[in-house]
Length: 396
Image 1 (cartoon, rainbow, N blue to C red):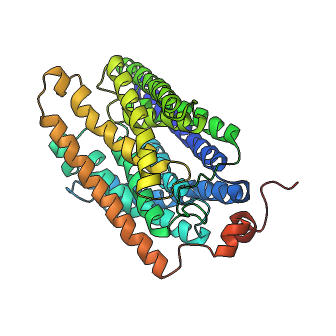
Image 2 (cartoon, rainbow, N blue to C red):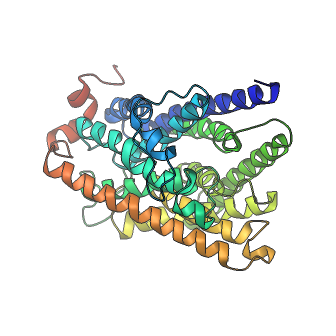
């Protein structure tokens, strides 16, 4: 092996480690945005997402996503062990776990732990790898020229639309909608803010790591992706802060934190082919969209999403993927490329959204009718920590 190949493998592994640390970020965000009586449960779900996902993606998920050359499906090769490709197995494992973790926040505070574990397994071996094969495994969307560099749609929208299916199926938390829409504040915004900082840091592995190399001219590409990623996050946070300041009279902390995440999710599809200015525009649009999306889903659709995961990941993932069709420096509408790329992006967003939401809706309804999806009213009122895990997160 030459030095450049070794350097590239090291880069992919280090980026994967950063993405792994995003699990801690998700855990902190979801813990902070939920009530103290359910913190242990949300931590447990995030912890087991990665544990279950690591095993199942190695056993079968990776080969479904990357094996074979089918238009819609990879291959059934169990217990992946190609010694020349294990760095990519690790990098994609942490991505698969991210898609699963997105769902846990949207269904927080009322979901049975045992049922959630089964869902986590299925999204890792069925929902994520099959649609992922369409884009990254040489499938039909890849052949059409669909561009999603690091997963605005492949990872984030898949998790977001599955989250919508789950939150819709399970229904709102007790007391959320009693004639009016009632806020149920999270218990610790310090944890929430820490989680967002960790996620922002981890995104410097998520997006730049997707270059899959850093040797030679790849280093310039990695540097561009770092800059576009950071600028989009900052723009998302700034726009969300000012929008909430204008709408609510004061700059809203929790919404602004989600604004940064919205910018990160939005830029993930096109971070490699947009300019720094384009990245600021994409982040700003995502920061604007996330506010109105959260309000619409919460107040109009009356879908109870405690952490805003559907809007941040599902909606902003779709918006960011579509914006590639406008801001790509080669092929984008704003750069004289016409509407061909935009049309392909729209097709991919719709197809993957329909797949993730449709299969998620079917799966959650089957689980609801068989294992049961929701805890009892008493368990929900008293807290999932005590009833599902036999201990409290805060022992005063």
